[in-house]
Length: 474
Ligand code: NOJ
Image (cartoon, rainbow, N blue to C red; front, side, top):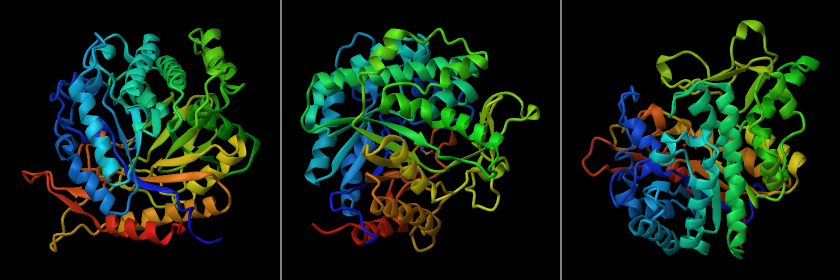
């Protein structure tokens, strides 16, 4: 073991359009579901992404800082409504030019762009027609992707279709704290299915271009599922939790088919599965990704479901330190989250378990062989402020990242085909309904200052050194 990854490993950080761009009504951009939600009375906390990190105006500064921090890749997303502002399908040149400028700026520093086509923000007009729940969503998404492939072609070497189908669908249609704020297990299943089909149809469009220097993948929020007791009941709960959290995404996008035990279990749980169409399954069987993006924050511990656990739901903690509840899931008759209270938790009730990145990479190797994997997000949520010396001493984040990265390097050394790592996030940004208090950035943003001053945190410098020390020379 040499404790270093290969010389062409991608090291960088990640962000997403609605969370960092701002400029919500500039440059000919149309309204997204998040613009709509944040400007409605449903937005109880009042935070919006109207300005966010103002990447729309400050992208040059942010890309330069990333490059100076030793990063050779950046992950960001394209806002659908900046490219296609309305239902007419007319392309907004100003939006296209904005992203071309961003891509050129990356090129200037030798930064490889890893670009997501959909990171939670869909057009408001589509949301009004039922959004992800309407099967036309898949066709509309594929049309938009085709425009992006036409406009940017091989300027983008790594295309990601959709970010975190599971988390997006669960938050929007099960817990309902994200727009359109619906709470229904039937809707959750339909939405998940339509999103998978949207991904598959986008891959079909991508393949038509026959790019030589671009690849397509998806980003999944991975939760390796583990159990604290090894009994037959716990093992059943583990499998069901793995289906719910992972396999209904990773099997179809990599193997081209849903797991055999999924549909029977859904039917047994009272889900009307008539939305599953044979022609869709046939199409799915022909689409395969080139790489898998894994957002890796934590694992999920599962135990058998008990009657008193109640109805199916996901319990996030969106209050932070003021709320004692730990993050968790109940899926009726399938499994319930378990917790190992010996491990550290962040202020939002999420277990920090660095070895999960190793377990996950080994699991991918076992189930899917050598498919290239990028850790497309990993990061530490913190409340932070500028210290008296004008700096941000985020030692906790450094310890967190070191923990995960050491396990990643070990997995790579042991033969896992992991090709990149992205810290979430490039700068502090809008953290969905947690607003701006929950910070993840390598670079601090002083939201009080007029010019949204950027201050690199201690972790930014530490990451630069880690990259240098853990990458093989040419
Ligand atoms: C996953 C999501 O992709 C991103 O949008 C979010 O802000 C981070 N995780 C942190 O929770």
